[in-house]
Length: 356
Image 1 (cartoon, rainbow, N blue to C red):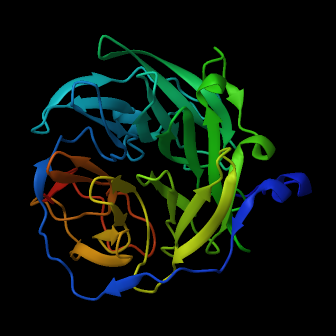
Image 2: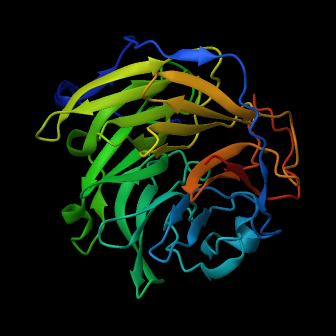
């Protein structure tokens, strides 16, 4: 981004800024080698896919930002059955008035039964034009879509904890040069239910920040464990953070728990609360990792070289979802410098791992 965000001294005073303190996580060198297979290849109009969620009917819901083919195919939210077949498509998403585009990324259903969507505008503008959308559901089906939050830079992951929505903003300052700052914002359901968009306010909504790798995206994947602790990973540099909370909901501490050269990148993540395990994707290296929270052990599930994904191999994996006994992983397939993925190929796929 070419315009820095000024964070006031008052705002910084109430934030927990992740520093260099670490808790030791043991990395296991051997890969588990749980080989992925193909779950779905939805076709040409799905050039870039991202967020996953499960609706009230146990169907899979997926965000399709289509950065590469937006002018031709637009963006959409699709619903799939247990076999990956498309059941329905919702494409009436409100376009940004400045960019004329909408790009849904992270998604999750809120306690009100509606789907909340991170609209990431960072590839269209360097200004704070990213948003949060709400796709309203009635009788288990999407009906209309509203803008509920405006004014973020890189809306990325969305997670709910109780009646609060948490959003990662991957860049809070300029993209080039210096130590980039990213962070997590929190919005209450009451705020999002006012009937009009609210403005993202760093003094009010930003609860923790992370020092990033110069020139790279920061806060990306986000998840909560069974005790309500928050985990966030940075895309560039592969750092991993844990945030604990006080009884009143304010942040107690944010600690960096992983900063290892073995872990190159953290894109999406999902917590299996029953197993006390977090699965996270490494988009740079075509890998999926498993963090055992009980034993504080990190191990690769799988890693493969550059691939098209047509056989189920990972092709710039981004968003994971636990679905029954499977781990579904969306392949983003939108190349950036420094990634294993070298080409935006014709195969737009979702991989699956048998994990239970």
